[in-house]
Image (cartoon, rainbow, N blue to C red; front, side, top):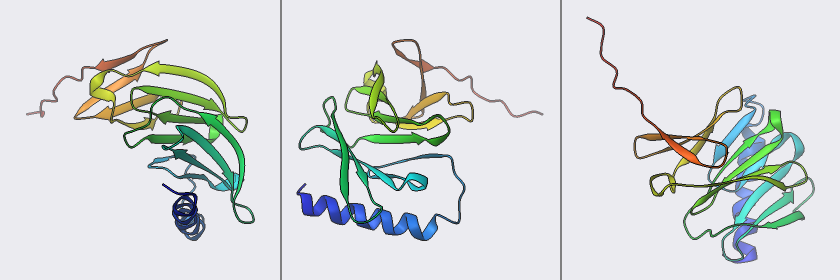
Length: 157
């Protein structure tokens, strides 16, 4: 991805975010990158070519605020922004990383099991992180990601 492609992609996201910013008071944002922290006018972009996470100001044009190296990112990454706790979660190819905001200081790293390597990230209201992939749910342990076995629900008769 060239710098020009990255800028175009980011501007589309920023324009969409600005249009819909008044419609939702969501405090946890997730999805494909780039991800925009609307209240701070900051965007997060994974630069797969350089294997880095970029934090950009979108107040008046684009300006790089910080760049930090990531683990391998050949697959499509996933990100989750938890504004209430000022945390950014990034799923790389085989790891889940946690960054403190606005410094982008890495504060956690978890190795992902094979089945969770394309997972989407969600957070509960309390900030508990769950990864979802292929009908499975994975939760964070102290240093590992464990699959959660959910019993089948039986309808009440």
